[in-house]
Length: 266
Ligand SMILES: NC(=O)c1ccc[n+]([C@@H]2O[C@H](COP(=O)([O-])OP(=O)(O)OC[C@H]3O[C@@H](n4cnc5c(N)ncnc54)[C@H](OP(=O)(O)O)[C@@H]3O)[C@@H](O)[C@H]2O)c1
Image 1 (cartoon, rainbow, N blue to C red):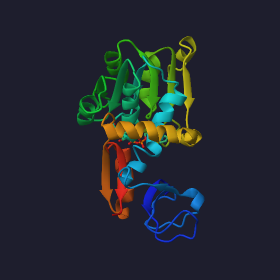
Image 2 (image 1 turned 45 degrees about the vertical axis):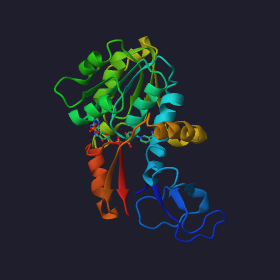
Image 3 (image 1 turned 45 degrees about the horizontal axis):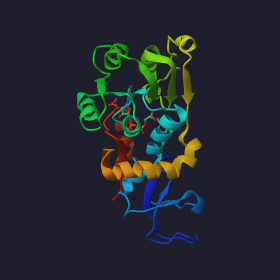
């Protein structure tokens, strides 16, 4: 199973890497990895907790930063809606939008506790529980009476359809993930209102984080400063032991995590 991991170098014959160094690699779920030096990135355990290099200052953080600023062409004054908003990517999208001058930030999540966290800790202007009886489109209409300029999609399905309905003319959507459909055994039906894209001149753009590596230094500088100053907050859900990795992954799909799901081997 691939995925990002941070660990300590046990032995190295590569220039620039010595035993005891801390590195990030993407060789996946394992206790030991043999990694060519070009696939390892040194990280500084003094500058941030090691787990931050997987989440808030790592791949999911860069996904949020690049997906909002580069892919959705976010600009000051935009109203922003993000689904999966209490997760690793979503919680950062909402906070970056707030810090960059969004006129309104709205999030959706799957429990009342997460909704409370979005408003009270992350500073979202409004949030709703998509598992409530009321359809997503109606909850979004109440939360964003002036409509939505930018939609950051982590979920797909009903959320995407609702966002298309509530997006303003020339709105932009970053299609980052479609977790609502990852376990579907049949192809997921498309949004039934896709034709609205024409009249509203919407832009729906898919993204892959690895296309945005050039933003990495700027991302670490800017988000690192917000984390240090406390302006950007993050949570992690930590599960102990590689033997619990599968359960942690399935738990993440069920929404048992708040922020980045981490499996700790320590
Ligand atoms: N394109 C890229 O390059 C890229 C990179 C990284 C991640 N992603 C994607 O971005 C999304 C977020 O990733 P992440 O790592 O930050 O995960 P995450 O949001 O930390 O965890 C996944 C969350 O999805 C929510 N969820 C599960 N089933 C759902 C459903 N049917 N409807 C609505 N929400 C549901 C759960 O929260 P609730 O309790 O709120 O339901 C769960 O906590 C994922 O779709 C992922 O695949 C894309």
